[in-house]
Image (cartoon, rainbow, N blue to C red; front, side):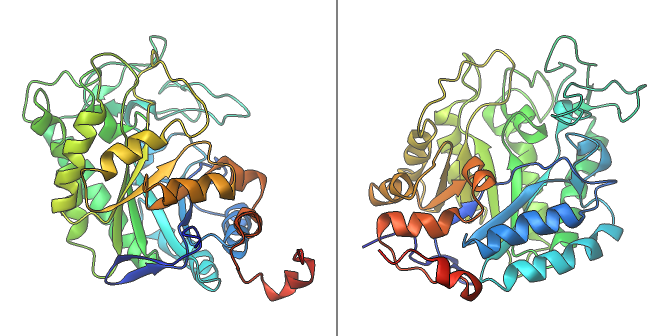
Length: 357
């Protein structure tokens, strides 16, 4: 029996209709953090296409936390109303709307990929000063970040809390904290970036302190919503964050009431050595699943229903996060169901196009 299109209970308040999750993928198309018709069409089309869950792209908890000036944001109350119609439309297709709450740290203040994808200096148009765990730039040519003081760390934690509160008001049912890909929280995790000597640096316990405090702050705003976290399971660099660290963190996040760990990898340092190939990150999801009893998501070059189903059948993950394939084909779930012989209802308007064999 197919697992990919079987419902899954995430917690007592949330059941997903299937195991396919739209992975957060930046569109770099917002102005002052506000979504527009592009975002509405982009996300609602994927809901119509049959994914069980959509995690909205990295949405900044503060203006300085944006990867680029085109990032979505939820740092002010004015943003709330802008998401409501889109979120409600997503729900109409039995798709659960989620949002990824993010702060880019030292990897912020960049241009759009198709225009000027490099870090923009604070004194240039569309640029601003970046912050990090330490004063180490991602590229040597980048403007050095400012190391966060305790006061600024407290502000970051409160920014995440307030962003979560706004997201809940907008109707999002899943809140995913972005702690991966070399962005701010990951910049505290990794000893290759974090050279602090205070309570946020040095030991494993100190380097994970920020994520724990963010989780605890967001939990004060949650009622029925589900809390997920995306991590990079390894830095792919000697002396960096690794799978053993990730397994230890997973057990702590489980105790803190996190429902899902979305397992990605890399992004911390420019000298990482990644061998990108089919399902190259799935083994990390499997390793974490073997020690943690919460739901684990696998992501990374999963491009067919057969591949996704096999990952679930082999108990390597509980959820399948799909990224680029959903950019190529918004209706990937419908065709994946045909591929593995699972019976899935197509939208009434498209039913006559469903292959009969």
